[in-house]
Amino acid sequence: MAAILIEAPASEPLSLSEAKNYLRVAHDTDDALIGSMISAARVQVESRTRRALITQTWRIVLDRWPVSATIVSPVSPLREIAGVRVRDAAGEPQELDTDIFFAKTASAPGLIAFDAGRVTHPSAAVAGIEIDIEAGYGAASDVPAPLVQAIRLLLARAYEYRGQGEKDDAMPSGIAELIAPFRVVSL
Image (cartoon, rainbow, N blue to C red; front, side):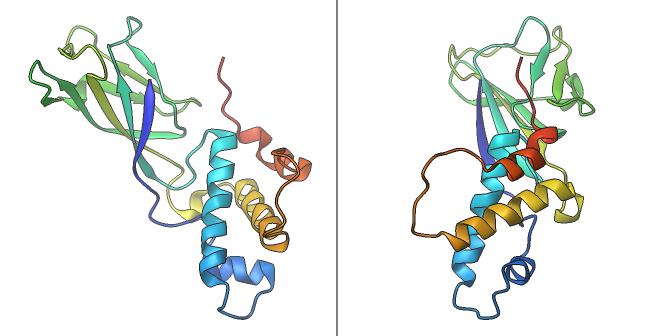
């Protein structure tokens, strides 16, 4: 199963002005740099937790329907199913009724259940099924405070030590402890 980002978040969990205030930067010279560092810090937190922070659209690509009639969402928190398509013999996408599918959003990771008797099977042997989902907490104000604080700390670290390179890929322990309760674990 592959997951492809279709629509990136429209904003960041931390605004440029909030970031500059946290960094105690009063000039505008580094605005573009700080903006890119905010995005990079968000991506780091998202990849370590397997959670989308701000609402974004992802496409799940499958070869065939699972026998269990349940798909584990690769991105959490799952908000809703936006669309489902199956490729026909000509390779053209055919829309399926989203009423066949049910998003179980209370669990992490989220689950997509479906009525196995009502789904159309793809003609393509590879990547014949596409499921578009919305994932994320919502707006910036909906992101849990510990995750926003982790972004602040990653941003401060990147801004302070920019250009010096990292000695290792380890997440600093204080930041790792902030995000640990939010990690979505695969079994």
